[in-house]
Image 1 (cartoon, rainbow, N blue to C red):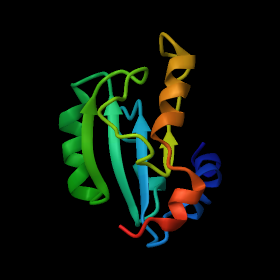
Image 2 (cartoon, one colour):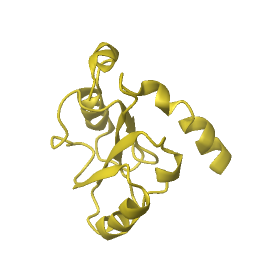
Image 3 (cartoon, rainbow, N blue to C red):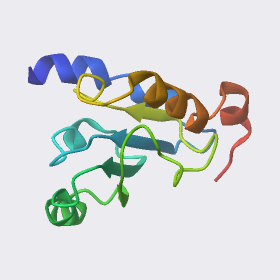
Length: 123
């Protein structure tokens, strides 16, 4: 599985903004098993409905300095993430466990930055 995930995530840096920063949202982050696959220029917002993962994620933040925030909430409502603010959304084993997959995908589209906006961003 490790090799498959490496292949899945290997081109993630291609979605970075003009400064080379990659703003990423992971929904259903759990204990953070995907963190090792994120490029070093990633700025990651983590989201999970289970607040008990917070302590594990805070420990992981010390080892993964690219982790920025942990948001407790359901993938169907990620209103705490602004429109067009992330370059990549990751959700592993999420759509099979939500109440409304269509609502999740609608939220994902809302928070994703358009390609034309990505080229102009210099944060």
